[in-house]
Amino acid sequence: MGKHLQTWRHLVLACGVAAVAACGDDHAQEVTGTAAVGAALAGATVQLRDAQGQVRNATTDAKGAFRLADVPGGALMVRCEGGLAQGEPNRQRLHGLVLGGRIVNCSPLTELALWKVLGGPPSQAFDSFGQARASDLTADAMAAAESAVLDALATGAGVDIDPAAVPRRWHDTPLEAGNANDPHDAALEALREAIADQAAMDFMGEMVVRGVCVVADASCN
Image (cartoon, one colour):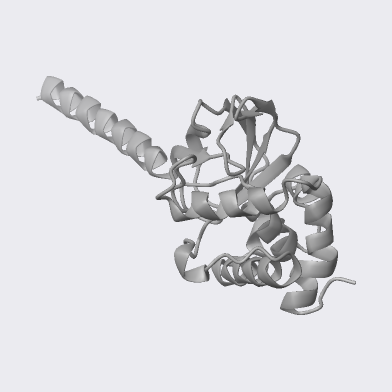
């Protein structure tokens, strides 16, 4: 009897450990995404910062795709920089944000939307990103920022992207860089061609000061 009881105790303990491990897997999952500027960013450095402030690192493949394992659930930001776009060095530092999903992208469009929703440079928000900042962000605010960017691109920069042709949630919708049939990639390509003769980051700064905020609600002065 004592031997059987000891066996049952071992089984219960083993099941308990397995249950805890399974529970942990529900909260720590793989995060995937794509870094692109119209063309894929190959070999770009990716940093992911979760709401606890922990940082993980990855490198994009030839298609701009990246993946990171064992990432806690909840909001997170990514930073993508370096790498090559069609063989040319990438000089843009781009950011992406996702509130609860497991897909997050880095592109000029996500950068512009983050300028709007964060009210300032995404690079500063990334460096201090944590639970307090994450709790202030909502899906509705992200959607409004994306709409404001499309309006500003059309009105202030002459980049007319049909909103119906772009994923509503481009920050966390799967993106296949270099695929002409992917609406997100097509929008990025249109943006890339429109600013080909400008310094991209200067253009983004002008968008924030004169485009996104003015067109949307004049919140930036």
